[in-house]
Image (cartoon, rainbow, N blue to C red; front, top):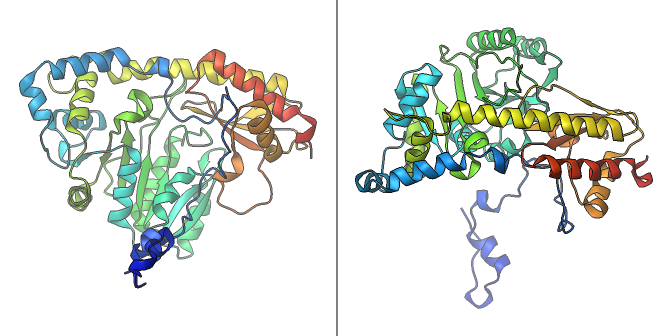
Length: 419
């Protein structure tokens, strides 16, 4: 609790903060991110940062038709403007349950994947608990994890995905994590897809040592044509939670995702959710349900899978376009690891003489583009920039992507970017 007395005659932002903020509100933000933000971007800048769907991949017509259908039905519209249950509306949850192969009671709709992760962390973690995360990993999860004051155990990634030998060694030595966080399909940032045998082995380890696998599968459905993806971690296990979202295919502004929970977690997570914000927007749930064909409705615009199919074809072409441009334009070339799917490229600059931090500054300040340095995804401390960049490919059309790629090549090849 706050203990500083307030002097009514000297109320300033500083004294109000010191006197009224809770310890959590006053705590310094220690979360990991993508480094220091750039100053105001140059006019006309075309950054390669995006993690959102392309405007030409969004199902605008399907969403318009779904919204018109809902708003044209006064009875349905009135129901969509009322309170609902924490788990979400039945038709959409039933549609999800059929896809996931589980009973509908195990499905809980959330305000996107990050909200689902926050609920899980609240339900599972106490201060001092240990969690295992991939190294490199998606750094924004630490925005939430910092509030739980957990010990993070980084697990290296290999060419075959998770280094399960290293994990098993730590478990045999006595490490007892509460949960393991993983991005199994089109891993952010690397693009790796965890092989089926690795998924099976990890579930066996979880069941032997008693930790929860949190499978954050935000990019499911975005495999590039010709790439086969194993089934997600098995929901037959009581130690697997699937975290999904509609954001990467239907649009992040919808703020709609879902959890597939084991039976023992349904009650605690639902209770926490009810105590926080009660439920996701019923209006949004109804619109999304109409697009995907929940209940007895026909899907719109090809439904969820048809919309995803169009997007993954677009993103595959854009991945190849940017890869070819960088390989041709950067001395020594680049290596793009795991061309599998999703919305990012994980590119390694092969010329060790290029200073990526200097190149990023030039990209921002002179050439009008930007990219995320790979070092921000690694947990192990290092003076090395790791030679990698994470490049967003999904949010730009081909002409803009070509422009951004040419600007990045100019930054990487500038004399000032040499070590």
